[in-house]
View 1 (cartoon, rainbow, N blue to C red):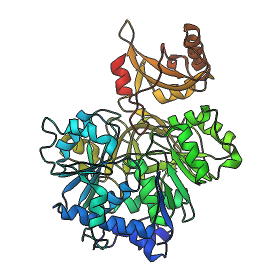
View 2 (view 1 turned 135 degrees about the vertical axis):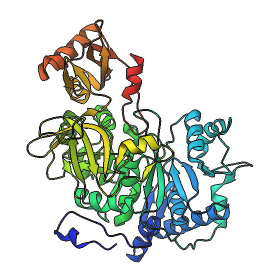
View 3 (view 1 turned 90 degrees about the horizontal axis):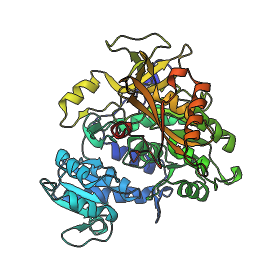
View 4 (view 1 turned 90 degrees about the vertical axis):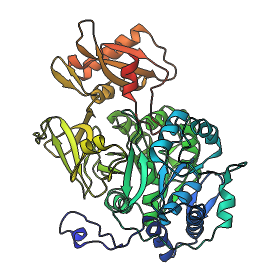
Length: 529
């Protein structure tokens, strides 16, 4: 990959994309040309796959899809648990010019029915445990466009078996002559703010995230072993476990099961992971787990958090336990990965750090005017990895993609030193007594209470129809819900924040509603109150 002169210090980083350009061909072929064919690229629950084996699998997958009658620019839906099958099919489709759509593996039949109809995918590749849900989804019009269903495991007619298709296909495939601006893949938004949207990304975006964020900010390198608790279908996980390691020739650990603390600890210790990507709720659960590994059992050199703002208390406690800082950052499905981040040599817990080189940020008021440092406003992003559009959703596309700038939907403030502090989603902000209150600020204060594991704060009207904060709280093991504890949590917040910010109501719950990527679905909490 040729880098422009600007990457050598004469301006903001800019990656020059050759023409034609095929993202899958680049990410795989660069490792063969570097002599890494015999190196392990992926370790999943069943096997180890070298870079040469990955290249052959990718070619077979692309040929198999073409043999089924799919043509360039047509779409295939991937509903796969994290294993070697995901990069095989995802990259194979892209190399053939076919557009893969990565589907959340924890959705309902109604969700899948919507995605099948909205995307008009002609083929589906599915992990066996998900097939019964898709069989429900394919009723009532869910199979209007679908021609082929391929199962990544045991299957009976009329379904096809993935291994049979791969074994019958050639391991030689010329890349489709796509360009950096061609549609490459889709990701459906995680749904933390409502219905998912098909987000269309171009071929140049994956390598851009690797070159602008993974190399300079994370310092990822060939000898790293990486593991992402965020799954591959999520934009965050796709960079962590596919774009970034393939860009430099690292080894990636994949895990099909849910990311519980015991499952994560097992991978971190058994495979001596050096870079771990998590989300705040998982880091909190890990710290609360009794079997947290000893320092000497870990080889970590770096941890990353995204998806939700990382409470400062969690970051500091994790550092005290492991000696490793967590780099908190923010990305989005629309921008593909992290564009604002802390740095390994400059971690400021309670902030999201500073812009990633290659991205420009603005904080604006409701009229689109830049606000002064210290004032809240909406965050806008300008960068080369912005999505093309939302599929089949012109109003949302127009509202989000404004020329070179993309609306984040997040409220931020920047301090005088240039560090950015998260204040909440646009629709999560509370106005209490005429003053804006960030729910994340209140949540961060609540979780410093020794009895609290997690918390989410939303707006609720009191008897006089005035908006006040309400907290939903998950307690740590060994603590029981009580009126006295609720009062104690309220008093605890008053000691840390201005009086008007404390939660007027505290409701104890067994768990918080979340997307599969760990984001708290506050809109569900607002609806439940």
